[in-house]
Length: 63
Image: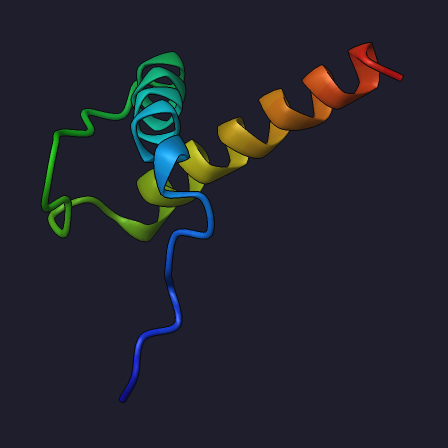
């Protein structure tokens, strides 16, 4: 199986990682650097959901 998850803008990786850690702290998920396979789908989903929420808010502010 091939992986299609590739970073389109490699320069953005550090900023995205920082953003993800920020979102995890906000929702109370103990996200760590590297492997996080011990987290539940709900915990991981809450981090992703928080990231999307913040991106939508930022977009709406810039309209």
